[in-house]
Image (tube, rainbow over all chains, first blue to last red; front, side, top):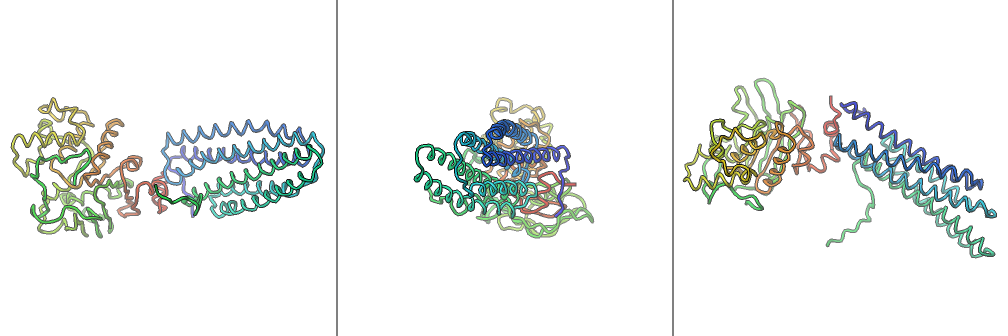
Length: 232
Length: 282
């Protein structure tokens, strides 16, 4: 299918700029996830602190992209796929900003953990992080390429992250029960939070992917088969 | 039949029950379609401007017709009250049914048809030498003689329906041409409503108006839709999205897509509709 362009080139340019800004923001958020996990693995509090600082840039992205969307809505009154794209952008920035906040939360746990003795490794946590990064990258690629099949594959992977989270949760719980003293429990809780933050990231990325499906197909797949149909 | 804040312009039952051939027989409404367009094609001389249009216009809803210039929008609505045939060299094939009755049947009187299917044009066209009151009554006087008090009731009823009464009630004797552009357009709508049509065709009714006057006309369309079947041709897609329940997209004389307005403007089914409403044409 040949991609058609808007007759009004300035409008086309505005939509392209918006798309580029979203990609930049998504790239920054993906980088924050990578660095927060590297900081966790290497017990690097300095890297964790540097990563927290970059959240300010993501917050600015959110505000600036919102403004761009409002300007396009006010000046262009977009229709059809353009309208779906703008509503996607408005929701996408919220999810991306929340994912960045969760990366900050991980970094805060890393700073605390780096001051305590190391725990035995929990390989499911890096696995979760790898899955989450892959999901985010694919959701963004699906958005750029308007690829609803790839977006659907992102949605399907959320269950894997959930499974890994539940497995990690049980393992950490067991470790805490068996731990000698308060410090072991505290470290266990911190690590459990890290796993929970990764699981929440996957939920936000799933939201993104569902929005991409809506943008491409014009079909709302959220809560499929789960909506309450009771009347009154 | 008429409900809400909209009441019939005419007093009593003076003109009710009018049909195309005489004023007696057919039912005024059908459940599904008020107007049914079947295999309609139209020509100006050798130039074919409509190709085999099939379209059902639902009663008491606003149907918007959109499409690029020259796509046949105006020709299509002019076929709905047989104004197309008034152009020298113009002809058509196919049928248009009003309440199931062929409007091109030999027995149909075009004047009576146009009373049931009224029209408002792009440029407000009040009769320049007539007062506001006489403008409202102009169409009615072609076919009916009314007593003075009935005339007063018609004028007030039509002007109220056209949301103009409060602005002109104290100067009904003044020339209609002295009103603002938006008021003149509402006066023309009042003139169309005075004959108590069932269908109101509006051909770009706001294209010559400022945004405030446009908003008044759109508000008027909202208030009229419970009582009348309205077909509006517009270049302004936002206007189509605002005022209509159903939208028809025409392209080069062909009907590309027809459907619920809220769906068509968010998730059109045809790529050509998508390209047109997102401005990716040409």
